[in-house]
Amino acid sequence: MSAQDSAVTRPAAAAPQKAAKKAPGIRQTMSDLHIWAGLLVGWLLYVMFLTGTVSYFKEEISQWMRPELAHQSTVPDPALVATRVVQQLQTLAPDSPQWSFSLPDARSNIASAFWRKPGAQEGRRGAFGNATFDPATGDTVKSRETRGGDFFYRFHFQFHYMPVLWGRWLAGFCAMFMLVAIVSGVITHKKIFIDFFTFRWGKGQRSWLDAHNALSVFGLPFHAMITYTGLVTLMLMYMPWGQNAAYTTPAERQAAQRTIFSQPPQVKPSGELAELAPIADMVRQAQARWGRDNLGRVTVANPGDANARVTITRGSEERVSTTTQFMHFEGSTGRLLQATDQGSGGAAETRGVMVALHLGHFADPVVRWLYFLVSLAGTAMVGTGLVLWTVKRRAKLPDPDKPYFGFWLVERLNIAAIAGLSIAMAGMLWANRLLPLDLGQRGVAEVNAFFAVWGATLVWALVRPAKRAWIELLWAGAAVLALLPVVNALTTDRPLWRSLASGDWVFGGLELTLFALALLHVALALRTARHRPKARPVRPTAKRPVSPTGPTGRAAPAAPAAPTPAPQMPNPALPAGELALKEAAP
Image (cartoon, rainbow, N blue to C red; front, side, top):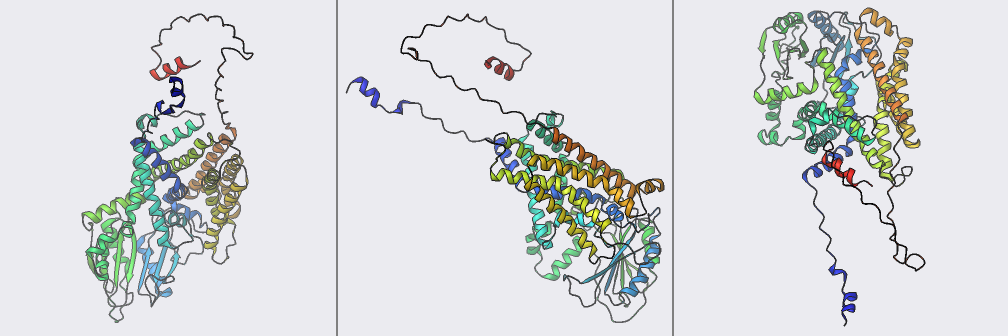
């Protein structure tokens, strides 16, 4: 075999072997984890964040959804209110083994009560009756039936149309993903402080990433706190094994629950009839201890029995803990049996502080607005993360007008979850004003309206081009939000101008907030309409090598020698990376 043959038959083994693929680093791994942890439950997280955000004003929303109740300029004396409510309950539920009712405060203009029905099994649906009373008169409130702001509060951690426990497990699953996304996001950002001050407007994907980073860094302590404390609120449900191992019998577990949640001891009825002592005297003792308007609930166990017990709990004012503090009275005599001003130990008090930080019940108006704004930034953080996922991948699609199914589905769900949820929440408020007042199950009908509107926005997002769907639903959101005060003015006697003139900042403040949110939707709609995606850069095609003999088989004429460029001195003002790119450019 000649040397030439050997060269021909020698395989390409002589070519350098392809280098092994380099494993991704920790930052790239955390980036992938951050993306997928946020995407898989991102829609549910967005819903939980937004409904949780408005829940910081659920009492005010509930007042707005009951316009028949007059504005409360001063809080009525809780002692007188308790007397009126007890008189009503003695008529409505004389045989009930337990009454419980809230007292009005600066944020609530009603006294809501529930009672256990005689013979009803604990935990069964329909075991309790309820009523709402006017604190000024003690009469049953004659207002429209509504779920009020309490629907948004409960929806954000237990959802709807599913068993409550399933909803809470699902919320906990999403919260755990959120916690993973926060930790992995912090590890991913090596310039987290610089990211807070960086925003490049009008740069497409770069702008979405800057917005996501700035919103994340701005509220990072709050987002970490609100996610972790959200898990703590239901930790005994998520991780019951420790408690079950320590307390093996139902009686022991019940006693442990009373200790953790600081509940008074239970007493069985004696069967001997006895009048309830004046409850106003007991309430005044609690007022002297904690303040005139700093009372929570009044619970009467075994009313009308010689073993009746009255428990009055302390309000949340000036307390950064939800651990219950109470005064326990003998119902037949009004004698004080027990008073707790301290928590139930370090562990229970730590849990109470975490739950209080999550709920924010202790907050004054300024702190509550800070909670609202930072939580709204958290909502925007989740929303921008979802949008960024599609913006980043759209730029790499072979044909953006014909995306693959997974991309198409994510994009449409983003539209319905982000733009559609605002319309659905406003739709529930519209239903509150427009549904007939005598409609049966009116509160349920309002909730059904919420989901019907939300479903309609999903259908709209599925059938319309993506960009048009974004613009149209954002404009629709702005319209339904801005017109709500108009609908309120046409259907009630409490228009915005009258609320402002009378100093009713519950109605006035809520409707001004609706205008502000409508303007936000207008800005987003205009920005989306003006957005023009940048043309994809055309890759330069590689020049075909020219044969030394030319296309005709003749030797190609030699090209004139190009003049040798003069050497250039490097510009010290350019960073090293930009300098390398500049030198490499043709």
